[in-house]
Image (spheres, one colour):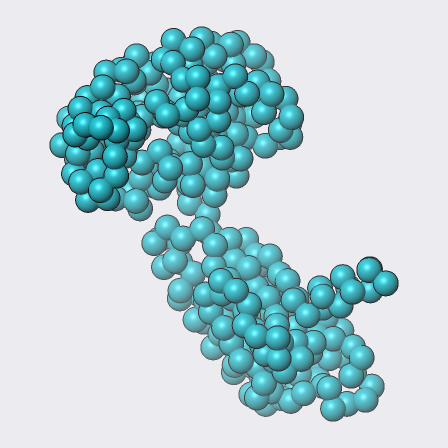
Length: 305
């Protein structure tokens, strides 16, 4: 089988939103490709019955692109039916439709099924090689119609991500989003955090009666915390570490990194540091979101009363 290749897109000249139909033999990487497309901003749906596709397109937001995973397990699947559906979609002026076909050598597919000990969907009671050969023959007309053909035989998950992003990311590049948040150690660590910094060694505005009811988004609180002689060195070291690690995480293929700052109550010091760090990263060009867990909880409680 030839080296990984891609066929130039034939339907992306339209100004409409993108629809990526993702197919290929089981084990070739369809689920992984859908995850990459989801990270690229597509609404990813796997094994949607073909008869429901038009309904999904009408109900989905007009601006959001859609990626659909389709294979022999898809309910009401047929090669001719999918080709007819593609022709209907391509004829629409409001859509830019691409068929992404993930190919793979038979011996590699067989090895992947052997390693995972999964049954092939087209050979439930027989050897996987029988199902693989049936599926490859079934999908042959779709492979010939593919707008993008990626051979995953010699690709790892990172290589596959790079290939899919090259075709479907807005600028062909992988993007890393950074979420920065503050929290209270009293309420425990946030879930799914990659890096945590403890700010409890800094001077605490809580002990200043005029600042107790304020929080770290208040310039007075930020100035109070910033007057701690250790603040600047700490903030600089944290920023330098992010400047070192974020490009490495991006190169590794991660899509999101979460950085958390904690203090006793999650109101003052951690909020100040989170605000400062998020601003610094945004100024460096990173896509950053910020959340203050304890402040958000306060707002929710007030809204319910």
